[in-house]
Amino acid sequence: MDRIRIKGGRPLNGTIPISGAKNAVLALMPAALLGDGALTLSNVPNLADVQTMTALLRELGMGVAHDTAARTTTITGPATAHEAPYDIVRKMRASVLVLGPLVARHGIARVSLPGGCAIGTRPVDLHLKGLEAMGATIAVEGGYIEARAPEGGLRGARIIFPVVSVGATENLLMAATLAKGDTELVNAAREPEIEDLALCLMRMGARIEGIGTDRLRIQGVGALVGGEHPVVADRIEAGTYACAAAITGGEVLLGGARLDHLGAVARVLREAGVGVAEEPAGLRVSRMNGLHGVDVVTEPFPGFATDMQAQFMALMCVAQGASMVTETIFENRFMHVPELARMGARINVHGASAIVRGVPSLSGAPVMATDLRASVSLVLAGLAARGETIVNRVYHLDRGYERLEDKLAAVGADVERMK
Ligand code: EPZ
Image (cartoon, rainbow, N blue to C red):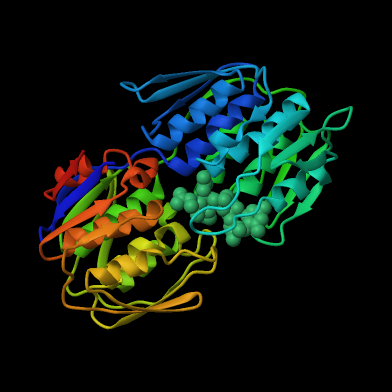
């Protein structure tokens, strides 16, 4: 099991290229199930989760060809099978995103229930209720979702989400493109990855209005074609490396990153004393003077991203003053806290909120990762800590961060992967 060894205390300086977004490509790849022609994605990140989605699409009979040098992926169909097996879905919850496209295009899907994960129970009830509203019959049997479209195919519907759900918005947006009639998604998620998916579907011939807003209107069409689409830059990777620059007191250019896609994260970083400036090549992030404690509450986009909560908490561990971090999206997303505490952080968790009292410095220690963003928050703490930090179970990191140690070493970090 690989580990990452970090010797802290070195300010980061230089340019970090930001890769295509994990949470965009994991929705764009299943979109290929909808079209008659080949879908070619560019700026595809080389991530473990992309490999898992590749295996799932191949399991469904799709052709998936990666050109890692060109960083493109071409996906050809049609699907010849309609079952997403448990052993793939349990590794990656985003597998559930094949459900909507399969039911819309082939009228049938059998997808393992994703089950919970480290950060919460993560139900898919909104995905299923939305498909039922479009006329599908859903049965849950033996841990599997069995979904069937009615004879004439799915029908357009007006769907109001009681809570904002990225995955449910994506599944139903894809399903609606081939439904008979019009669909309206109300209280839809507005994350940039959904805007990216909608733009790709439009290129494939879909008719979508309200892109980027919380009200999407989709006019169903008879068929979609293939197309080409560049994966949007990863705003969470960009935010993560912004925290790395800030926590080490360095200055980094995040190549290809977009300020508008950081949402409230940019405002909060600036309030904490971090410079975030837009340039043609990307975002320049630097620590101005001292870091101050700032309170954050995670919210759907454009609020402060839950996927940035652990990373920001690591930063607040060495700020002057206190910070209240409140997690409103997931019920168990503070697993980085005990590990940060082993490095000398002062954090008290009370329900959905954690009080962080800044300390002058952290001390390196062997720590253990439990989920993707908790893992990277430990790397950030290690970059700032005195001495050596060993982060175990880095397979979590490989799911969502491409060449993390290379990108950090290239801007001056003393970091290496140990087999
Ligand atoms: C996506 O997960 C992301 N994953 C997550 O990123 C991200 O944290 C999350 O959106 C929120 O932004 C991908 O895009 C692959 P949700 P998703 O449906 O779609 C509840 C990372 O680290 N809910 O927006 O699963 C749910 O329990 C990962 O990259 C229901 O109640 O998240 C949660 O409390 C972690 N019923 C809230 O909604 C449903 O049917 C938000 O979940 C669906 C969701």
